[in-house]
Amino acid sequence: MSQRCDLSVLEELTSNAKQIQDDVLTKILKSSANTEYLSRFLEGSSEKELFKKNVPVVSYEDVKPYIDRIANGEPSDILSGEPITAFILSSGTSSGNQKMFPRNNNFENIKFAAALSSLVISKHVHGYKQGKVMIFSFTQPLSTTPCGLPLAPATTILLKSKNYRSPAKNSTSPDEIILCTDAKQSMYCQLLCGLVQRDEIVSVGAPFASLLVQVIHFLGNYWKELCSNIRSGHVSEWITDLSCRDSVSMIVGEPNLELADLIENECGQESWQGIISRLWPKTKCIEAIVTGTMAQYIPALEFYSNKLPLVSRTYASSEAFFGINVNPLSKPQHVSYTFLPNMSYFEFIDVDGDGEIVDLVNVKLGGYYEPLVTNYSGLHRCRVGDVLQVTGFYNNTPQFRFARRKNTVLSVYVEPTTEEDLLNALTSATLALESSDLILTGFTCYADVSTVPGHYVFYLELKAKVNNSTGELPLDNKLLVECCCVMEESLTSIYRHFRAKDGFIGALEIRVVEQGTFDSLMEYYFFVSRGASITQYKTPICINSVEASRVLEDKVLARFFSDKSPTI
Image 1 (cartoon, rainbow, N blue to C red):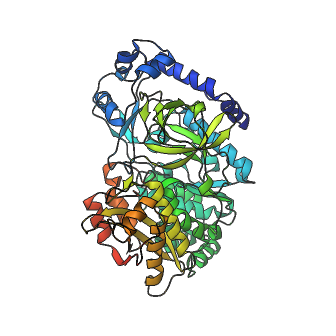
Image 2: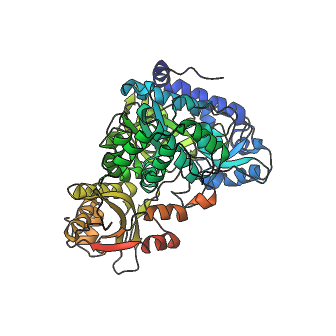
Image 3: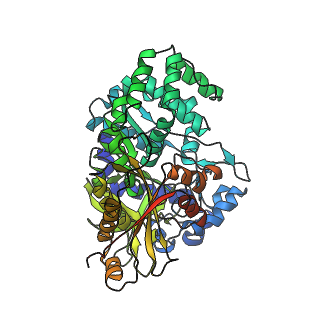
């Protein structure tokens, strides 16, 4: 049954968070207490205190044997009281390996949360409901587990589920284009639809900032062909997916010389600054996740959009949907997500204290926590691996800032450098680049211990703000050495001590790589070949793969080192 969805529901949920969380856990336990997994700890009981006392905190690896058994044909009730109807694939960009999570057929909560998020945006962005959104999304071919259940990324499973309701009324792209499993054809057709409907679009976006930047790069390569299609009223012959082709052809319609000339004039200019707002002039915001590792793409999106508001709508993972951003126009560095207590049962491990586990409503302001998920699909007290900071409360429900992935660290000696530390360093480099003709469009790093002492290496993909005739990047040695220095100054006091006083860490290095390098990294590192979707892709903030390093090393244009020790 569909849930009522209006802004008053948000008030009800967040005001009654404790009772709703208790009800969610009771419902899960009544359904799953007699499963093979939980019966060992609960003996059929659905009591909350017994659950918290006896059921252990686990990682994905602990529950994976049960998941594999179901995928191989054993009954769902060894793990879940609800029938498992599909398996979703995680991106694998955090751990390097894709994970397979069981799902049941109930997508109502996810659709409810997405609708609620749209209502929140409508409240804050005037005219949002009156126009169309161009949100780039992609699906992959469905594969199957040995027992025949569907296996695909979460977006694909959702969009191909029987109870999926199309957003086509306010979307620029028909379902047939989004459901096209050829990513290149789909991206081209989504852009073509968006260009033809340019005057109706109020929002441009993608699930992640990295994907939207990739779309802009794709537009840079194909704008002339797109203009030719609009001018002739005929779609390129290489669009061979018939459903996709028929749908986009209906939208393109008759030849439109005036529109083709307008787009050609905008895309042909030396600088692509503000290209989004120039091509889609009624755009009011950019919708894409820009928190966590996606923060590295903020400068590029601000450049391409003339600093339109960047809206990070939701916080979710393969394990669960967590919450929404109720202040969508907040600056990226101030984004917090309000947890929705009806999604799953949430607990939190205090990561800076004694490891105490507390309920959703008992977290403390300013505290850092790792969430645990108990859901309707067979995960019970499962670690997610994110570290969140409590920034406030909306009614009785906490709001969290994404701080970092728990286990993503860089170290060449004994210094524990976290993802958050690396993003702080990246922010400093971005500020140093602001006065130059360069913007950052890609970033990753690794600990190089082949040298003595070992040192940090940052791969940066840069783009000129103004195109020049040679296509060469204006790399200024003084500027990029300064970037190395300010990045070191932004790292922890422990790093600076070992670097400056003890000499246990070598000078930080920046390696500038060719444009398009991070697209090549995605093609390798990912997963497009391993069955995941480009919709999921997040550039790893740290790499530890020899093969991935080779992809980057083959594209290095220049190297720069810090020329002074950081302050202690």
